[in-house]
Image 1 (tube, rainbow, N blue to C red):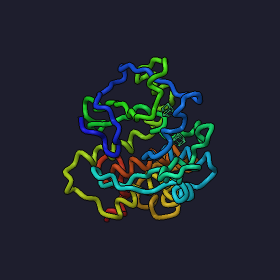
Image 2 (cartoon, rainbow, N blue to C red):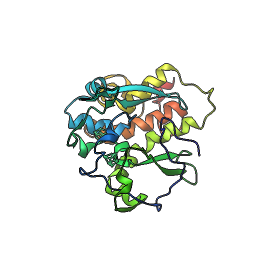
Image 3 (cartoon, rainbow, N blue to C red):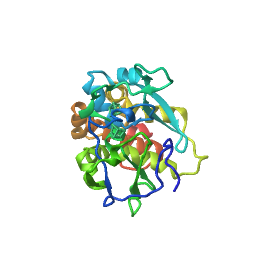
Image 4 (cartoon, helix red, strand yellow):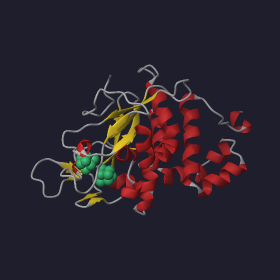
Length: 265
Ligand code: SF4
Ligand code: SF4
Protein backbone atom coordinates (compact mmCIF):
# COMPACT_ATOMS: atom_id res chain seq x y z
CA UNK A 1 0.00 0.00 0.00
CA UNK A 2 1.27 3.51 -0.83
CA UNK A 3 1.79 5.64 2.25
CA UNK A 4 -0.61 8.59 2.31
CA UNK A 5 1.18 11.87 1.59
CA UNK A 6 3.09 13.34 4.57
CA UNK A 7 2.84 10.31 6.89
CA UNK A 8 6.07 8.47 7.65
CA UNK A 9 4.89 5.96 10.27
CA UNK A 10 1.95 4.43 8.52
CA UNK A 11 1.54 0.69 8.98
CA UNK A 12 0.79 -1.10 5.71
CA UNK A 13 -2.48 -2.56 7.05
CA UNK A 14 -5.72 -1.48 5.46
CA UNK A 15 -8.54 -1.25 8.01
CA UNK A 16 -12.28 -0.88 7.59
CA UNK A 17 -14.95 0.32 10.04
CA UNK A 18 -15.23 -3.15 11.62
CA UNK A 19 -11.50 -3.69 12.12
CA UNK A 20 -10.53 -4.25 15.77
CA UNK A 21 -7.59 -2.91 17.76
CA UNK A 22 -6.44 -2.31 21.34
CA UNK A 23 -5.57 1.21 22.40
CA UNK A 24 -5.90 3.62 25.31
CA UNK A 25 -4.44 7.05 25.87
CA UNK A 26 -4.46 8.65 29.31
CA UNK A 27 -2.39 10.93 31.52
CA UNK A 28 -0.67 7.96 33.18
CA UNK A 29 1.16 6.76 30.05
CA UNK A 30 4.90 7.49 29.98
CA UNK A 31 4.61 8.93 26.49
CA UNK A 32 1.87 11.43 27.45
CA UNK A 33 1.83 14.33 24.89
CA UNK A 34 4.76 12.88 22.89
CA UNK A 35 2.44 12.60 19.88
CA UNK A 36 1.92 16.39 19.97
CA UNK A 37 5.56 16.99 18.98
CA UNK A 38 7.27 16.88 15.60
CA UNK A 39 4.04 16.30 13.75
CA UNK A 40 2.41 17.54 10.58
CA UNK A 41 -1.23 18.34 11.32
CA UNK A 42 -3.30 19.38 8.33
CA UNK A 43 -6.28 21.43 9.48
CA UNK A 44 -9.67 20.95 7.87
CA UNK A 45 -12.07 23.89 7.30
CA UNK A 46 -14.20 22.80 10.27
CA UNK A 47 -11.09 22.50 12.50
CA UNK A 48 -10.27 26.13 11.73
CA UNK A 49 -13.79 27.33 12.55
CA UNK A 50 -13.78 25.42 15.85
CA UNK A 51 -10.33 26.60 16.90
CA UNK A 52 -10.69 30.27 15.92
CA UNK A 53 -14.01 30.45 17.79
CA UNK A 54 -12.53 28.79 20.85
CA UNK A 55 -9.60 31.22 20.84
CA UNK A 56 -11.94 34.16 20.09
CA UNK A 57 -9.99 35.13 16.99
CA UNK A 58 -11.06 35.96 13.46
CA UNK A 59 -10.14 33.31 10.90
CA UNK A 60 -7.58 35.78 9.49
CA UNK A 61 -5.92 36.19 12.91
CA UNK A 62 -5.98 32.46 13.62
CA UNK A 63 -4.36 31.65 10.26
CA UNK A 64 -1.66 34.30 10.79
CA UNK A 65 -0.75 33.25 14.35
CA UNK A 66 -1.12 29.48 14.38
CA UNK A 67 -0.79 28.09 10.88
CA UNK A 68 1.38 27.68 7.82
CA UNK A 69 0.19 27.07 4.26
CA UNK A 70 1.49 24.16 2.19
CA UNK A 71 0.73 22.93 -1.29
CA UNK A 72 -0.31 19.26 -1.40
CA UNK A 73 1.86 17.83 -4.13
CA UNK A 74 -0.73 15.47 -5.58
CA UNK A 75 -3.54 18.02 -5.74
CA UNK A 76 -1.67 21.30 -6.35
CA UNK A 77 -4.11 22.90 -3.90
CA UNK A 78 -3.23 24.79 -0.70
CA UNK A 79 -3.69 23.15 2.68
CA UNK A 80 -3.14 24.59 6.16
CA UNK A 81 -0.97 23.02 8.84
CA UNK A 82 -0.52 23.89 12.50
CA UNK A 83 2.65 25.95 13.00
CA UNK A 84 4.83 24.14 15.54
CA UNK A 85 6.85 25.98 18.20
CA UNK A 86 10.19 25.15 19.74
CA UNK A 87 9.39 22.61 22.45
CA UNK A 88 9.73 24.01 25.99
CA UNK A 89 12.72 22.70 27.94
CA UNK A 90 14.05 20.90 24.90
CA UNK A 91 17.70 21.27 23.90
CA UNK A 92 17.14 19.38 20.63
CA UNK A 93 15.45 20.66 17.47
CA UNK A 94 12.16 19.25 18.71
CA UNK A 95 9.06 21.29 17.89
CA UNK A 96 5.65 21.03 19.50
CA UNK A 97 2.04 21.90 18.82
CA UNK A 98 1.27 25.41 20.18
CA UNK A 99 -1.61 23.95 22.22
CA UNK A 100 0.23 21.20 24.10
CA UNK A 101 0.82 21.67 27.83
CA UNK A 102 2.28 19.38 30.46
CA UNK A 103 -1.19 18.25 31.50
CA UNK A 104 -2.52 17.76 27.99
CA UNK A 105 -4.20 19.58 25.16
CA UNK A 106 -5.31 23.15 25.81
CA UNK A 107 -8.02 22.93 23.14
CA UNK A 108 -9.03 19.30 23.71
CA UNK A 109 -12.78 19.79 23.21
CA UNK A 110 -12.11 21.52 19.88
CA UNK A 111 -9.03 19.52 18.85
CA UNK A 112 -8.47 19.00 15.12
CA UNK A 113 -9.78 16.02 13.16
CA UNK A 114 -6.30 14.45 12.80
CA UNK A 115 -5.83 14.48 16.60
CA UNK A 116 -9.23 12.82 17.06
CA UNK A 117 -8.41 10.04 14.62
CA UNK A 118 -4.97 9.30 16.12
CA UNK A 119 -3.69 6.53 16.23
CA UNK A 120 -5.76 6.00 13.09
CA UNK A 121 -5.51 7.82 9.80
CA UNK A 122 -8.07 7.92 7.02
CA UNK A 123 -7.57 7.92 3.27
CA UNK A 124 -9.97 8.31 0.38
CA UNK A 125 -9.26 6.49 -2.83
CA UNK A 126 -11.93 8.05 -4.96
CA UNK A 127 -14.33 10.96 -4.73
CA UNK A 128 -17.66 10.33 -3.06
CA UNK A 129 -19.75 10.10 -6.22
CA UNK A 130 -17.99 6.82 -6.94
CA UNK A 131 -20.04 3.74 -6.13
CA UNK A 132 -17.83 2.28 -3.37
CA UNK A 133 -17.18 5.49 -1.42
CA UNK A 134 -13.52 4.44 -1.48
CA UNK A 135 -12.54 5.16 2.14
CA UNK A 136 -10.17 3.14 4.30
CA UNK A 137 -8.23 3.51 7.56
CA UNK A 138 -4.71 2.71 8.71
CA UNK A 139 -2.58 2.85 11.88
CA UNK A 140 -0.20 5.76 12.41
CA UNK A 141 2.01 3.71 14.70
CA UNK A 142 4.83 5.82 16.07
CA UNK A 143 7.53 4.06 18.12
CA UNK A 144 7.05 6.32 21.16
CA UNK A 145 3.30 5.65 21.41
CA UNK A 146 2.59 3.18 24.24
CA UNK A 147 -1.19 3.34 23.87
CA UNK A 148 -1.23 0.06 21.92
CA UNK A 149 0.04 -1.75 25.04
CA UNK A 150 -3.04 -0.72 27.05
CA UNK A 151 -6.01 -3.03 27.48
CA UNK A 152 -9.01 -1.36 25.83
CA UNK A 153 -10.69 -2.79 22.74
CA UNK A 154 -12.18 -0.82 19.88
CA UNK A 155 -13.50 -1.17 16.39
CA UNK A 156 -12.68 1.66 14.00
CA UNK A 157 -16.37 2.66 14.00
CA UNK A 158 -16.49 2.81 17.84
CA UNK A 159 -13.28 4.83 17.98
CA UNK A 160 -14.64 7.35 15.46
CA UNK A 161 -17.83 7.72 17.50
CA UNK A 162 -15.96 8.02 20.81
CA UNK A 163 -13.63 10.70 19.45
CA UNK A 164 -16.35 12.74 17.75
CA UNK A 165 -14.86 12.23 14.31
CA UNK A 166 -18.16 11.64 12.51
CA UNK A 167 -19.45 15.21 12.72
CA UNK A 168 -16.06 16.56 11.55
CA UNK A 169 -16.01 14.21 8.56
CA UNK A 170 -19.61 15.06 7.69
CA UNK A 171 -18.99 18.81 7.69
CA UNK A 172 -15.68 18.45 5.82
CA UNK A 173 -17.02 15.96 3.25
CA UNK A 174 -17.43 18.44 0.38
CA UNK A 175 -13.95 19.88 0.96
CA UNK A 176 -12.37 16.42 1.09
CA UNK A 177 -14.22 15.58 -2.10
CA UNK A 178 -12.66 18.57 -3.87
CA UNK A 179 -9.14 17.45 -2.93
CA UNK A 180 -9.75 13.82 -3.88
CA UNK A 181 -11.46 14.81 -7.13
CA UNK A 182 -8.49 17.00 -8.14
CA UNK A 183 -6.06 14.21 -7.26
CA UNK A 184 -7.86 11.90 -9.69
CA UNK A 185 -7.26 14.32 -12.59
CA UNK A 186 -4.10 14.22 -14.75
CA UNK A 187 -1.22 16.15 -13.08
CA UNK A 188 -1.01 18.56 -16.01
CA UNK A 189 -4.49 19.88 -15.20
CA UNK A 190 -3.53 23.05 -13.29
CA UNK A 191 -5.63 25.71 -11.64
CA UNK A 192 -4.83 29.42 -12.02
CA UNK A 193 -3.34 31.26 -9.02
CA UNK A 194 -6.65 33.17 -8.72
CA UNK A 195 -8.62 29.90 -8.48
CA UNK A 196 -6.23 28.62 -5.79
CA UNK A 197 -6.74 31.90 -3.87
CA UNK A 198 -10.49 31.40 -4.01
CA UNK A 199 -10.06 27.80 -2.79
CA UNK A 200 -8.02 29.11 0.14
CA UNK A 201 -10.52 31.84 0.96
CA UNK A 202 -13.66 29.68 0.97
CA UNK A 203 -11.96 26.72 2.66
CA UNK A 204 -9.94 28.36 5.42
CA UNK A 205 -10.64 32.08 5.86
CA UNK A 206 -14.36 31.94 6.61
CA UNK A 207 -14.67 35.50 7.97
CA UNK A 208 -13.02 37.00 4.86
CA UNK A 209 -15.14 34.71 2.67
CA UNK A 210 -18.24 36.13 4.36
CA UNK A 211 -17.05 39.66 3.56
CA UNK A 212 -16.39 38.57 -0.01
CA UNK A 213 -19.92 37.17 -0.41
CA UNK A 214 -21.75 40.08 1.22
CA UNK A 215 -19.56 43.07 0.41
CA UNK A 216 -18.46 42.38 -3.18
CA UNK A 217 -20.59 41.94 -6.31
CA UNK A 218 -20.87 38.19 -5.54
CA UNK A 219 -24.62 38.20 -4.86
CA UNK A 220 -25.23 40.35 -7.95
CA UNK A 221 -23.29 37.90 -10.09
CA UNK A 222 -24.64 34.57 -8.77
CA UNK A 223 -28.26 33.51 -8.44
CA UNK A 224 -28.56 32.65 -4.72
CA UNK A 225 -32.05 32.19 -3.25
CA UNK A 226 -33.20 34.39 -0.36
CA UNK A 227 -33.44 31.48 2.07
CA UNK A 228 -29.79 30.54 1.51
CA UNK A 229 -28.69 34.19 1.84
CA UNK A 230 -30.40 34.39 5.24
CA UNK A 231 -28.82 31.13 6.44
CA UNK A 232 -25.26 31.97 5.40
CA UNK A 233 -25.50 35.39 7.07
CA UNK A 234 -25.68 33.85 10.53
CA UNK A 235 -24.48 30.24 10.33
CA UNK A 236 -20.78 29.60 9.66
CA UNK A 237 -21.31 25.92 8.85
CA UNK A 238 -23.99 26.81 6.28
CA UNK A 239 -21.57 29.41 4.86
CA UNK A 240 -18.80 26.82 4.69
CA UNK A 241 -21.03 24.31 2.85
CA UNK A 242 -22.18 27.08 0.52
CA UNK A 243 -18.52 27.94 -0.17
CA UNK A 244 -17.77 24.31 -1.00
CA UNK A 245 -20.68 24.19 -3.49
CA UNK A 246 -19.36 27.37 -5.09
CA UNK A 247 -15.82 25.94 -5.28
CA UNK A 248 -17.14 22.76 -6.91
CA UNK A 249 -18.69 24.90 -9.61
CA UNK A 250 -15.62 27.18 -9.90
CA UNK A 251 -13.06 24.36 -10.03
CA UNK A 252 -14.93 21.64 -11.89
CA UNK A 253 -17.99 23.36 -13.39
CA UNK A 254 -20.21 20.91 -11.49
CA UNK A 255 -23.21 21.41 -9.24
CA UNK A 256 -26.10 23.82 -9.05
CA UNK A 257 -24.42 27.24 -9.00
CA UNK A 258 -25.81 29.68 -11.54
CA UNK A 259 -24.62 32.99 -12.92
CA UNK A 260 -27.51 35.49 -13.16
CA UNK A 261 -28.89 35.88 -16.67
CA UNK A 262 -27.97 39.56 -17.05
CA UNK A 263 -24.36 38.70 -16.03
CA UNK A 264 -24.18 36.14 -18.86
CA UNK A 265 -24.98 38.78 -21.48
S1 SF4 B 1 1.91 8.87 22.19
FE1 SF4 B 1 0.07 7.53 22.12
S2 SF4 B 1 -0.36 6.87 24.21
FE2 SF4 B 1 1.19 8.52 24.28
S3 SF4 B 1 -0.04 10.36 24.65
FE3 SF4 B 1 0.15 10.18 22.44
S4 SF4 B 1 -1.63 8.96 21.76
FE4 SF4 B 1 -1.46 8.75 23.98
S1 SF4 C 1 -4.19 20.15 19.09
FE1 SF4 C 1 -4.07 19.16 21.07
S2 SF4 C 1 -4.14 16.97 20.64
FE2 SF4 C 1 -3.66 18.01 18.71
S3 SF4 C 1 -1.42 18.02 18.59
FE3 SF4 C 1 -2.04 19.94 19.56
S4 SF4 C 1 -1.99 19.55 21.77
FE4 SF4 C 1 -1.97 17.56 20.72
